Image (cartoon, one colour):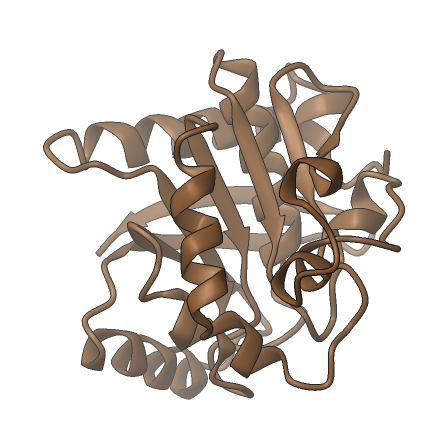
Length: 222
């Protein structure tokens, strides 16, 4: 398991505490709403969305919830690398009917945390994510897990992220201080709002080149 999953390798660190704060904030600011499926996305690539998804998933599992992390980035999947899992089969196989769901969901070394990797990269990611089969899959998974986190492609380059925002209960945006362009962030938020996405908030993270991983997380209310 890669050391980017700090919440697992160092659960007492300040970073892990920040993720616990994120878990608390999302729960208590949406207490009157059913928030079971959360999309985590960003404006552009390289802003840390997969790292946020993995660590948030671990933190939720540590609280006793049965959690599924779905890698729905069918263009540049990262989740299988973080958890050192095979990506021979996964979401894309299920969507084309090659494999059964229960044979593709993988256990991790972390109690209560399960992974559905992306599977082989298909030629038509947007069409697959916008399919009836995808919506049916997500609906069926809700009966088996307390929380589902979707690692989504970024909003700006492709339509995948906007498509996924329509099948989740809420969306969290990831912003990397020092690298996320203000205009790209604004356009992404406008695009999500224009289609009625439920934006839960923004995770702000700062990176340290010396430490080699993100060192600060905050939760900003929308």
